Figure 1 (cartoon, helix red, strand yellow):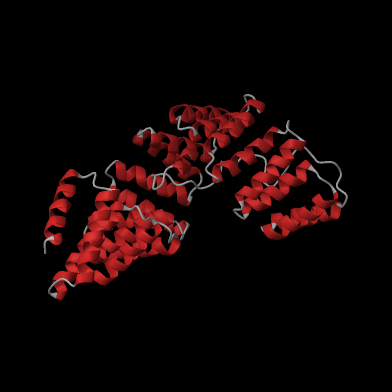
Figure 2: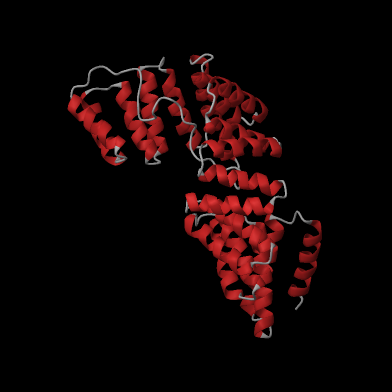
Length: 366
């Protein structure tokens, strides 16, 4: 399932790393006795209370007194929890330099590499963890992760299946295998795994979202809508679920509902250009050119090479000119520029490209 991090807008959404018996905040093997056991306990307590900044500070103080590999891992975990992945990686590197045989730490460093989109390094670390945990369930899980990151989805699904043979009842393994089956286009099999995973562990927002995608692929639109709605109930900031709901509503001519859900997606994840573009397209359908243009311009400020957004912007400018009763010089030049940028960055639709080229000639001669 982790391989989907490589693909913008992919159908899969990663919920979290697979749960392993060892807590992520733990660090094994045990470090040398720290100079201040009290300080270390304070750091562990802060971490357990999810006060990661305080935990990081305390672990840093301990490291000033004792350069312990285990404490580097603890501080790395605190930094990782704050999404400061590069600094977490540096701590894991320090720990592994001091204790290179500590195979469980390769998993944690693999998470950091994954968050930094360093796919091969992540796969290598998961593979090291798998080799050192031999034929244990964890070993098959690590193997599955490594294969997923490298895009070897069939082998990843098989590895998760082997882990399930040793760990019956693990819902997260079912969901992980379902994700790999989605990449393989085995939608019915993926649906079976998601159904069983959600039966064992209900209310998991990301599994609900992914099952919604599977149901949509299978043409079960009502089930997909139900899953997307359940996903945002469980996780109100799950932007892609709002986005997919909006797409389905727009296709069903529920324009006002779609705009509301695109807006929720934007509120949750404002850096996604496609959310702005799609909402703008609906504003344009309602002949609200000013709102549409604001959304297209925002999309292009986020993603300057977004070819379709240039095309949509040009159409909005054309609609505005008709409403105003003619071209102003600035409006005309902006429209021409938008069509030109479309041809530069997109233009892969031959029919649309031909139309844009003809329209550009007309506008330049107007």
